Length: 354
Image (tube, rainbow, N blue to C red):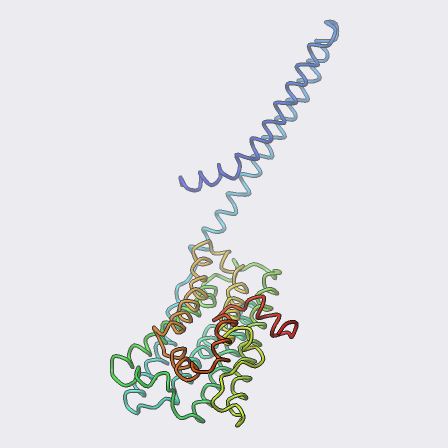
């Protein structure tokens, strides 16, 4: 109650100070006018101006009461939505990702295969989206976005695994029990944490969800941009690797001039779009669910930086060992940012500069 009272005070004090300042000026003008009047008019003027001041004060009090009532109703709405918030979708999410990655762990131990790594780890997102598709249009749109992305990426990575038969980045990691468990546990965390924006929004009661907002358009736009960038990056690198003339060379074509990991950047973008798309629903339940949804892109950022540093996989380290003696690769490292495109890299990709 003390925090609510403090919030009311912080919001209403500037407005109240402004209104009181205007009332003070009016009273002062009235007082000066009274002193300038002849004595014969004082009685009549005082009666008339006093009535005006009283009416103005009554109006100010009415507006103040209306503001307090509006703020109280809004706070009560947030409190009611937060009280009705259901954690069940979070449990469903944990169950879906736990089951998929648990199966993956058992298959890895039993067979040592690499075919199923991304098929199960990434494909679990589509199963999650289907399980929490809901009935509200925003939740269904969010589920469709996640489902399409999960199916697209899982299919591409599974096809790539069928062609390469193994993932050299994970040879050492999956060689023992502890490494295999660690891989699938991180995969579970990745799924559960990254999907938080959708799972949290699914727990907000239908009656508390706002109508269509411009943030819905912005969120979908960011998601679409990220999906296009990730897909284009994966396709361009795959085509580059399949070209016989490109053997032994590093990929620096197309969007790979934007950054050294445009597919990671696209992934970060599309999940940021999911956060924005669900932001109005999450805000209706109060600040805590809205703040918790931000863990999704922050976790992804930490994961990508961990991969870039070699703490999680040896992707970057293996590339440097393979291409490090190439002067063109050293120039590429100096000119191209790791994750986030720079102004220079954008202009170079668009062909405005060399």
